[in-house]
Image 1 (cartoon, rainbow, N blue to C red):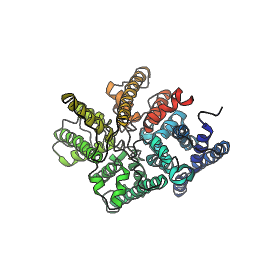
Image 2: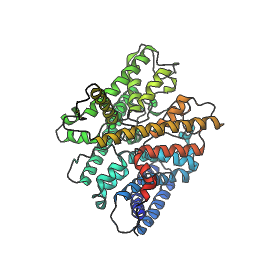
Image 3: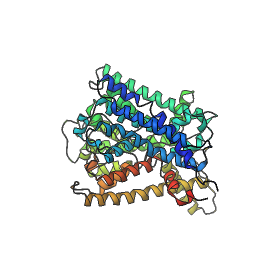
Image 4: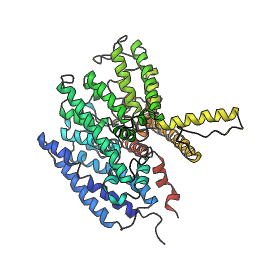
Length: 513
């Protein structure tokens, strides 16, 4: 009897992914050579990737990738790639990421574009520039999606490419920008690369104009690599707070861009900008951020949003520009799940923190690198609630659910969407309980409030990055036990694959005929 799931086919393609990952590892090697640092950690990763990748490919049968194998491939890839990504941290042996659990946490956070970190302020100083650049690069590689890249490169994945991309990142709007899915994947990556280059040009351009003294070329590249994937890692211990207001406004713009459906930019390129302007999700996305920004601006402007005023961050009650800038920056960072920080929002008042917590559940647009629940799901849930209220008043009415005049929501799709939101909230609640228990039993943690435990759960499950309290934007996840860090890494993995792909592989029915 033939196997229900031919796992060897999936493992073989994981091996192919490993072999292709040897190419981006040459970037930190070049940085190491330029700054006269040791390239050994990255050479070690290349050797491991080449050997393991070749062995996995060698054992794979020459069979076509089926539906079940596609689920397994995607899930295994997002476990295997962080395992490879932690090798440079372990070989270098510097700082807090020299420990296996910490290295895996940091690598998983990087590739899933979460942005949570175990690096403290001192840890940044002990790491080489090449190692910090590798940390940035992991987020850029994970942003658009490793599977999307493989579909764009490998002809054998073209047939099942749409299914693969849908299972890696179910939010992608694959409306066939081109007849072949391989061409669509290439277009998405070209847009991604183009926007990254634009970010480098703008950031470094501000430096050349004298508006950003410490935004040198290294920092411009490093921050561009984590702006577009909505990652949030920074080689600076104080994140984007370390840079001028001009840089903070520029980063805000690119975060908003990164949280937008990348397919819409293709329509702008080919001369159909109305597709972007008329898109309901895009307008809802901008509206949600505008509302959160406006409320936070008022709170910061009046002083109500600050529990105490930190020194040196330019927040002065009754001063509009810094209040608006900080509100807009943190709103974009949280809604798009980028995780950058322009100041320590641990200093904000409880009402301001509560607003940020709610914003963590919004997410960016489908088809972007953003995580969390995503705006389109909330939009459809709102439309569904409106329809239920209408049909309750008018029982005889038949009212189809539409996103727009041309897009009708199928009832099966609606059930799947509502199920996703429900499962997401259930996992969030259970994760909060686990984190809260960790806070009570771990002597390294002095105090963990309910709000802080909730922020840890949504920060990892929603791929957001920082939370409140000990995991605030200027702190880290270092205090948690190794077991808790592995649990949080699992939350990042589940969140990056939008839950259902992982649950399918973990269900007994998946492995039975």
